[in-house]
Amino acid sequence: MMSRITHSQPKIFSTVIWVVLSLFLLSACGSKSKKKEQAHSCVGYFKVKPRPSWVDTEGLKNGVYYSQGVAQCTGLKTIDVKEASTNARGNLSRMLETQVRSEILLIRKSNTATRSGSESGQASTTIASDALLKNSSIYAHWVDPNSGSVYSAVKVSKSSIDKAIQDAKDKEQAKFKNQIFTIQVEGEHQKQLALSITKVLGENGVSKIVTNQEQAQYALRAKIQSIDIFKAKKLVRVEVFVSIIDLANQSTKWSQQLNGKSISFQGFERDYQIRQALIDAFNRDQQKLQSALEKSIDE
Image (cartoon, rainbow, N blue to C red; front, top):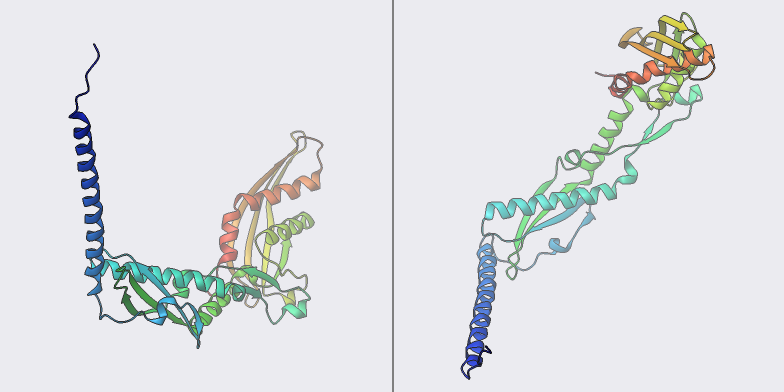
C-alpha cells in the first residue's frame, strides 16, 4: 500500500529543521559567550595595561637572555600563571640550547698534553636544563584583555649561563677518562694484554695514552691471574686483575677482577685467542670500567 503525503508534512519538516538550527545557533552563541566571559575573568589577575614589548621579545640583550610563555585562561589564576611561567622557562631553555650549542663543546686539555705529544680531543656534552635555568627568574606577567591569554616573562643573565657552561667543562675535564693514562702490564702475555687494554680504553673515551710514565697522571695496571688453554676445544679462558693507579702517590683508585673466554670455530691461533679472551673479559664487565672512567678524580 502506498503512503499518502499530506499538505501538512512539508510544514512539519520545515519546523523541525528550524528548531534544530535554532538550537545549534543558541549553543554556538552560548559557547562564544562562555569563552568570552572566561577570558574576561582572567583580565583581573593583574593591573590592566597595554601590551608590553617583552611579549614579542626573545633573545640576548645587554647581557641578559629573555623569553616568555603563554597559557590559555581557565579562570583559575594560580594554575594559569604557573602554566605560563612553566612555558616561559621551557621556551628559554630551548633558546639557550640553540644559542650556546657551539660553546658547550668541551675541549679536553691538560698542561702535559703538549709535552706528551698526544692530541687534545673534543667531546660534546649536554648541559641539563636545570643547570642552565638555575638562576632564571619570572619578572613580569600580563593578560591579553581580548583573548584572556596569560603571559609570563622570564630572564637569566649571560654570566649565569657562562658559569653553568664552565662548570660543565670543569666536571667533564675532571673525569678519569679525560686524564693522561699509561698502561702497565705484569706477568705473562704482556703484549696481548697491552693491546687489549689500549683497545678497551679507546672504546671508553680515553684519548690520551702515553708510553712515557713520567708524562702520565694515571695508569691502568693489569695482570693475568690465570689462563687456561684448551687447544683441542679451541677454547681459552682468562682471569685478569685490573686497577686504576694514581701515579702521584701510587694509590689505587679502582680495581676489579675480570673473567673472559674465547672460542674459535675455525683454526686455533693461540696469541689471537688469548687477546680475544682478554677483550671479552673487559667487555663482559664493560659497565664497571665505564663507570670508573666516568667518575671524577676528586671523588
